[in-house]
Length: 99
Image (tube, rainbow, N blue to C red; front, side, top):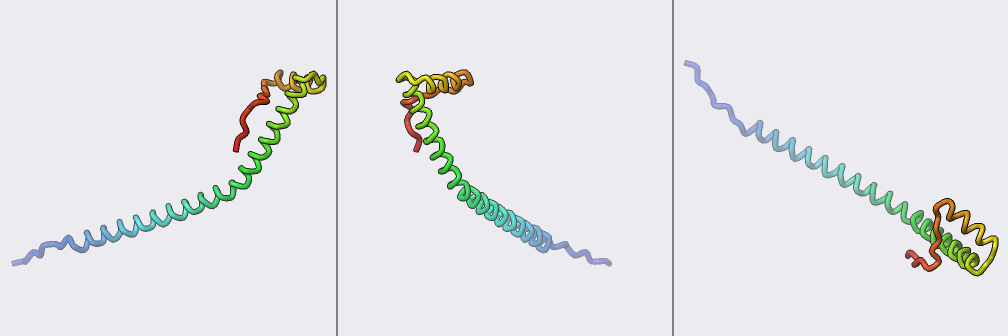
């Protein structure tokens, strides 16, 4: 008679568990690498953002000064403010400064 051996599930389950652990470790390392790359890119943009904020504050200050000149009766400033208003740009001389 032929004797049947029961198949052990230990080896296939062990291989499957090992494959899952390796897959999760690989995914975790990829996510960590992408996160560090995104952090580096954000850090590189900080200087550009600060420069843009400075430029915007200067432009707002210049526009507010022009509006004040126009309100005081300066003809050239009035022409400039009217041209800006025709293009849909309004100037608020009392606007709070952004940090």
